[in-house]
Image (cartoon, rainbow over all chains, first blue to last red; front, side):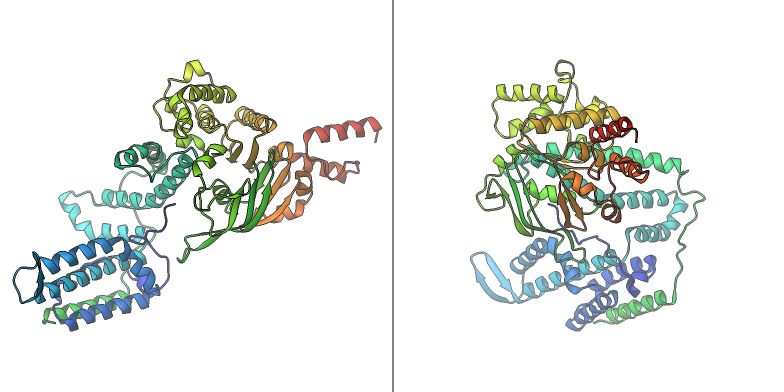
Length: 264
Length: 284
């Protein structure tokens, strides 16, 4: 009943992009996001597009699959586009109707914003598609390590994120199961007015919460019985090391940044 | 109530790299009053198959005909379908949600617009069938009960719909021996009253004793469809796909290997008992 959600879903693979160090990928994703906001010219946008095409090709994912990540956001895209087109103040008027005015500048800024949004989503989707959640949180933990000096619970935060991500598919599966079971008993989740629908969620939500708490309890018990006691003195099975390819990728993105700062 | 599956195929997550065929081109005709056992190793498509039968999943190809009507056709009354087909999923106790046992069991009947008096009767009937003490536990929260009691309450919730077809997905998994035999006895009793039973299980013994037909699934496809005695005679074939034969067949087999005259098709305890008695009395 609940079908695929691409956004934030890891796609296993063994490409060069998949094998990049998670820390590098995190930093570079942030850099690319900044880059998207730095570029101003058409050439600049084209170069960023080229960069995305290159990463997608290198990651051996299909373009169609990556673009599917945009699907849930088309509403926001259209919404911002329309707002920007019609409510841009000033500029040369192209045509107007009733209270709506379309200006050349407005149109340009709308297109620019839409492209930026698409770029942003593509960048983050590429990160999550090519990096396993575990690697991602490990990378984050490693990057945030300096914060430990001010007693920020870095390890605990990373562990919570890992567990939360680990249980998303489980919860989706569970929701699907309970939905089917209650549907077989005559429950309806997609008919009636808003109130009726909200009331209809009770047979779904109560069992879901009960099972989530049960799972949390079991997991805590299992972790404790394997001597988990926080991050102190914990070593890693997979030690993260920077490789040649990581430096090449970093150099490449830095180059792009310089290119953008120079005014493209 | 007959159920006919016609070239049924179901594809999970079609057009994504995760695409997988869960059920492939299965045709099956289930007659009124059948006790059908469905076996197959994990991932062979059993649960998907019952989801399709109950109209909870839409087939990618093929049709599900109930009393000759395609349940996925436009305008088919799904509410009537829910009334006639009861589904007990794996670990049904996970679907309990109401404040009291009574309300939880009454959920189904109320959803299909059964009158209050009739609902009351049905709750009593279902609880009696499941041997649950109506007076003492109807006002308890289902979450206060023991595991076995929870499961029986959940099944009572399905039986209160008075289904004519009951589909069960591993109903005895995780129950204690007493709970198992109690539940199996009840299922057999329902079948005796004319309710069609479709049961997924890993217990070959339960099927040998009760089913009149066994369907074996392997790799999303229909592998064997025959009577239990014929299915369980194909020991090697079953072992090859990760299944096994009932205990009784194994005992009969080792007796045969010792030169005793026990027929191939012995799968029930009573049959074996008869044969052993005969052998003992015959002095052989």
